[in-house]
Length: 121
Image (tube, rainbow, N blue to C red; front, side, top):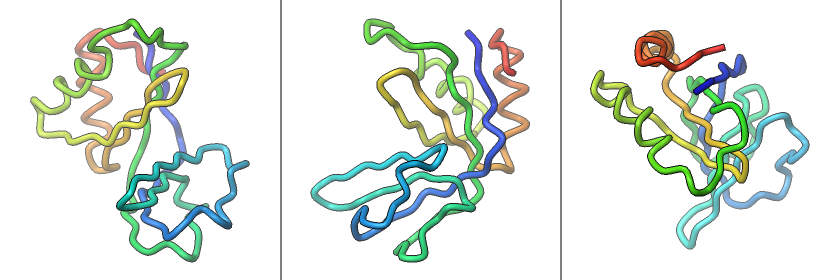
C-alpha cells in the first residue's frame, strides 16, 4: 500500500462552533458531537477563536480510494506504530484515511512503515 507524506504541520483544536472556519483551506477536518466541536487544520490556519489546541502534528494519507469493504487497513498501521509506542490520531473521509502523529515521532513512524512493506512517498 502507498502512503503519502503530507508536508504541512497540523493542529487539533476545540472550538465553540464552526462559524468563521475557512472550509476552502487545503485541509480542514471537522467533527461535532453532543459534547464538542473539533477541528483539525494546518497550524498556520488555526482560528483565533480556538478554545483549546494541540500543535505539532504531521500527517500521512493512505493513497487511493479505499473501498468500504476493506477490513483492517487502519488497524494494521495503528498496530505497527503502537508496538513502538507511537500514538496516532486518525481521521477518515469518504475516500481514504489520514493518520496523524506528533512531529517528534514522525520520522520513526515512516521508517517503521517502510520496514513493514509500505511505500511511503
